[in-house]
Length: 122
Length: 190
Image 1 (tube, rainbow over the protein chains, first blue to last red):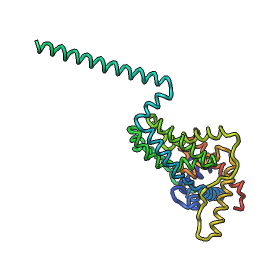
Image 2 (image 1 turned 60 degrees about the horizontal axis):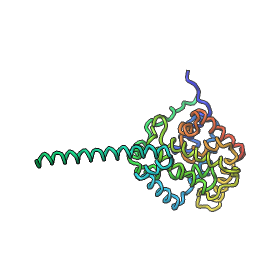
Image 3 (image 1 turned 120 degrees about the vertical axis):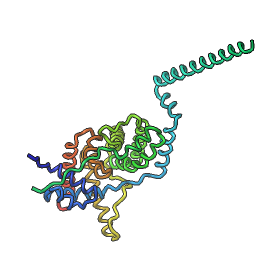
Image 4 (image 1 turned 60 degrees about the vertical axis):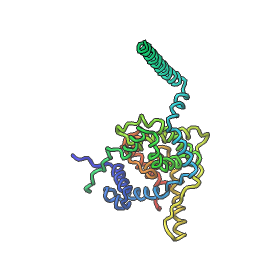
């Protein structure tokens, strides 16, 4: 058996339709609302008209845009690490390990080059 | 019984999906989402906090938090905008908590509806808008949240449920009760 939608559900459908551009009376009728429900849809239209989107101050928009742009840059990784000591330790440890690895590789390469050079010069 | 139309399907694909993925790959691409949602997040904060300065503060915190966590966002059931408004909701709740007293003064700097070229009717529309906003301020916070998210930001009941941590059905009931209460405050003769 099909369950009859509650008034709250039908009201929601009417509001969806109104949001999509239907006039309040049409939206209420299509959603199967009675006179009381229709009055609520019309009230919802008044509420919407009373709450126009306030204008964002251009200076605020520009300032926040600049902050976001700044935060999106790679140097933000350091700020991320600096905010928490634990992250700083991890970042330092990873950085040190990479540094030690690179140095060891460079020394190894250099010693091989020297060794092979000696062989060639013999 | 009236033949009811089928309920509108909630889109399973997030309309912001491509922009979210771009921002996850390169945070510099977050700008598109910022431009799309700045007005709406600001409007949500403004109508609940009632002050441009506090609204700017909550909006700034919301977008900085969203950018910081964008890599962790997964579109599993929730759309990007419901996730973003959840962050905004938390920022607004923090702002309200930190206030010593709740603001009851009427909102300043609200754009008034321009309904007609007739100055008399325009003044009437502005007066009606002030009455409606004043009535809204009398509702409980959860009912005001539902009304603002629905009528200012255009979120669906499902998305509002995700923001407020309630079921879709609970949001519909809250919405119904909020409108009935507003109707009672404003008077039936309206």
